Length: 123
Image (cartoon, rainbow, N blue to C red; front, side, top):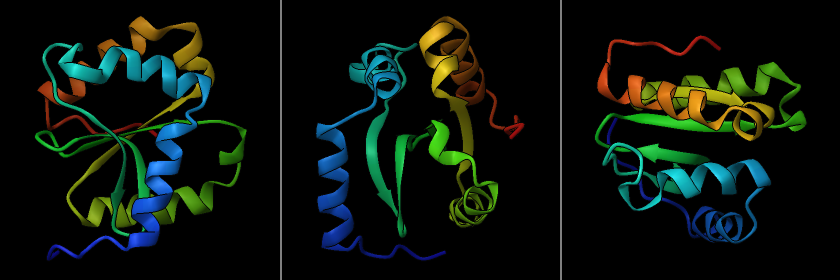
């Protein structure tokens, strides 16, 4: 799919989201920022098409989403994931509780998915 410019609205919204992370996003970002996790480059709250991805590793075409109770509607996530996949990304999702309770396991999983591009997310 050809590159499409990001709307200024999405860009502003992403900037706002970077200023107000959830506890889980803040905790994971502390591990991902500045290539702290296995020297892997991540960006946070990145506009991708009409959506804002929580974290993106562009080199591995991997999007990390941290989901809370607002993600109780799986149809929205399916549509969203389908668009992101059509742009060549894999979407790896974790629940807020996973990040808050077992950050090491979350980080190990992220490293595995970045290093092995054949791995496909389970949800």
